Amino acid sequence: NAGVTQTPKFRILKIGQSMTLQCTQDMNHNYMYWYRQDPGMGLKLIYYSVGAGITDKGEVPNGYNVSRSTTEDFPLRLELAAPSQTSVYFCASRRVPNTEAFFGQGTRLTVV
Amino acid sequence: AQSVTQLGSHVSVSEGALVLLRCNYSSSVPPYLFWYVQYPNQGLQLLLKYTSAATLVKGINGFEAEFKKSETSFHLTKPSAHMSDAAEYFCAVSYNTNAGKSTFGDGTTLTVKP
Image (cartoon, rainbow over all chains, first blue to last red; front, side, top):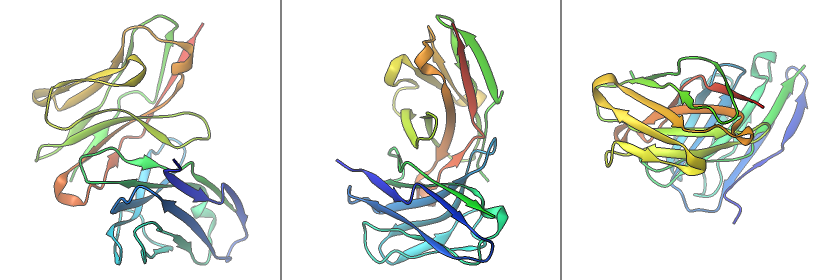
């Protein structure tokens, strides 16, 4: 009963490096989301997807990219990492809009 | 645009005391409202949700919330705080019309004193 799985849990990047944060869910949910959480700021939506092959920008998409080739997977790509991208990243999924969102355990990213 | 305001970024109560965490939303269409809890170094877990059925919603761990349309509020309460309730709490709103994108409040950190 895995739910939403994120990898890695922790990562330190140097400025200018790139990386992919992995997210997979085993609940056959169509809706998936990437959020970042900064201290005292709540969660901000980066990108979201309503199904395989369909993605769209959220509130804070700059510096990130996503893809959704399967229902299960929704990776988040950081190109040219910057210190402003130091944050905790959460992936979430839900079956339909009025149901609860299931969250992964988060990825704590530090850019130095 | 939808928004969520949580009044009080930090709330401190004594063990056994009433817990009241405030949430107000702004919306021009009927919302779906959620309270989530986040324990240190973990993801968010659902406490309870309002989806246009009963206005008083009961959740896990003894929490409940009342949807008041006239006040655009969805405050979270628990009659008697327990030490294990210490965590961060988030109020969130979403709609059928926007792909279920949730807008979250900034969170309230609950401290429970012995």
